[in-house]
Image 1 (tube, rainbow, N blue to C red):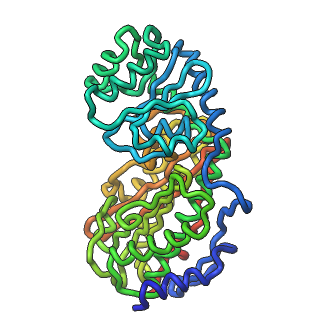
Image 2 (cartoon, rainbow, N blue to C red):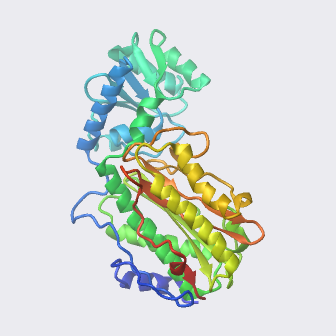
Amino acid sequence: MQNRRQFLETLGSMAAVSTAAGASSFGNVRQLRLFAFLPPANTHDRLQPEWYRRKIKQVQDRMKEHKLDAMVLLNATNVIYTTGYFHLPTERPLAALIPANGDPALFIPGLEEDQVKLWWVKDYESYFDYPGPVNRVQWIFQRAAKRGFGGGRIGVEEPTPSRLKHMTQGAPRARIVDASEIIEQLRWIKDEDEINLMRRAMYFADFTVKAGREFVQQNGTVSEDQILKASADAVADKMSKELNDVVGIGIDAPFGGLVPFGKRSAFPHAIPSKDRLKSGDALILSFGAQVGGYTVECERSFCIGKPNDYAKRLFDAMLAAHDTAAENLKQGAVAEEVDKKSLDQIRKAGFGKFLKHRTGHGIGLEAHESPWIAEGDRTVLQESMTFSCEPGVYDPDWGGFRHSDTVVVRKDKGEIINTYPTRLEDMVIEI
C-alpha cells in the first residue's frame, strides 16, 4: 500500500479538474476528470458586510409585517445568517438584537470583545463570563429593555419554557412573540451569492469523493477509517492551499464523512469500522463540505469489481429514485409529493421493504434544515430553495446504494450543483 504522503502528493500533482470522464466498460479502472466551480481570482469565500446589511433590511421588512419592535436572536446559526458574525457557540449566550430600524447590536461574552471589533457590527455590549451573577439570557433582555424595547413586541426563536422565563424577567413589560418563521423562511430561499458559495463548497465535496475513490483504487483492501483519514487529509490540504477566506469552513466528522461498505453499506448512518474492503462489496463514499458557513453534500455509491445482476437491480432502483427527485425539485412542487414520486421508483422495482428514510432535506447554513422532502411536509417549493437529493435502497443481507446531490429548485426542474458522475458504469472500482 502506498503511504498517505505519496497518495496526497499524487493528488496534488494531478490537474485539479477538467472535462467529464468518457465512457468505458465496467471492468476497466476509470480515471475521472471533473468539472468544477472555480471563482475568479481574488474573490472572497464568504459573504461580505454589504450582503448582511441587505439581509438586515429584509428581516426588518418582515418584522414590520408582524408588527415587531425588535428581534433578539439567540440561535448561533441565525446570528451568523443575519450579521455574519462567525463565532464558536458554547454554553455562553450570544445574541443579535435587530431593531425595527437601524443597525443591529450584539450581546456577547467578554471573550469575544476583541474579535467583534474586526467586524462591521460596531454596537455591542459584553458580560464577563458564564454563568455569572444574573442569568445571561435575562441579562441580554435587560439590555434590550434599556434600549427602549422594554414595552414593545420582541420577536424570538422558539423559546423554551426556561428561556421564556428568563426573557420575561429581563424585560417584564415587553410582549415576547415567537417569530421563528421570519428567519427560517428567509433562509429557505438562497440568492445567487449564497448559491455561489455552495458551488464553491461543492468543488471541495466532489474532490473528496474523487480522493476517496482514488485511495481505494490505488490501495485495494483498505479499512473504512483509512479511507476517511486519507480523503480528509486530501481535502484539508486542498482547502488550505486554495481558499481565500477560512471562516465557516467545515469537513464532516469523523475524519470527514461516512464510507461504509459490504453489508454495512445498508446502514444509512454507519459509524466507521476496521473492516477490510473486498471484491464484490458495495461502497458508499458520503462527504460534505462547508465554505463561508454554507454546507453541501456529495455521496456516491460504488461497486468493487463488476456488479452482479442483483447489484445492478438495486443500483438502478436507487438511481431512478434519485433522478426522479432531482427532476421534480421544481418551483410549485409540493415537498411530500416529490418524496412519493421518488420513493415509488424503488417500490415499483420491488425493493420497498429496503426503504429506510425520506428523499431529502433542506440544506444551507445547516447540513439538515427545513423544509423536508418527506411524507408530511406540504411546503410548496420556491425557486432557489436548496435540498439534498438522497433516496437510498438498503438490503441488510447484502448492502445498500445511495447517491446524494445538492439541488437548487428551478422553474422547470432541479439544478444539480454536483459535478461527480452518477451512472453505474462510472461507479466501478477494480482492486
